[in-house]
Length: 164
Image 1 (cartoon, rainbow, N blue to C red):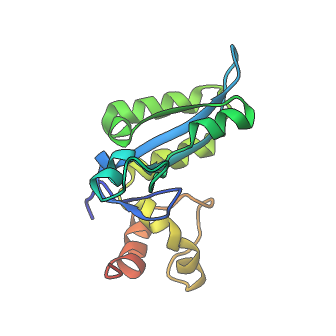
Image 2 (image 1 turned 60 degrees about the vertical axis):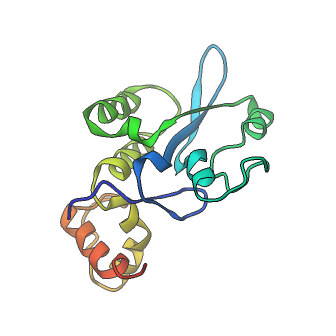
Image 3 (image 1 turned 180 degrees about the vertical axis):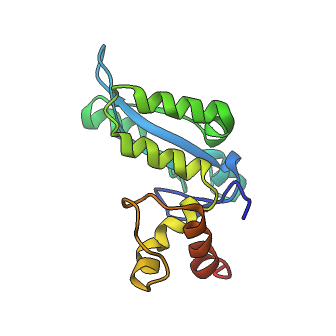
């Protein structure tokens, strides 16, 4: 299988079919020492506008963080970039740099985001792995959230394809 997406939105759970419709975001807290929290992959605001959401309505179909709410919570500011900025060698290098930073994210959070963006089928298969393991279709022979490409391909073909 050879495809860039789709990916699953962490807010609404719907698919993000194209990279231009995805957004990677997180919240940074603290000055001058910054820590980060809540790394996630969501639909971009432009996606909802292109697909019928009324941009004049507050948060109309918006999957991204509400900046005012995040600031009120703990002084956090939203940091974000388009999903396409995290693709390819430069995007992978950026995420690997985050893996080495002391930024508040766990190494697993960054590793999982790398797999979601860079491993074909990983993100759409993820919702079905527990079922595939329970059904005996996939042997859990690696730590949770880490799967071989053959396992991902099997889950996609058995549980994802044909559900559209």
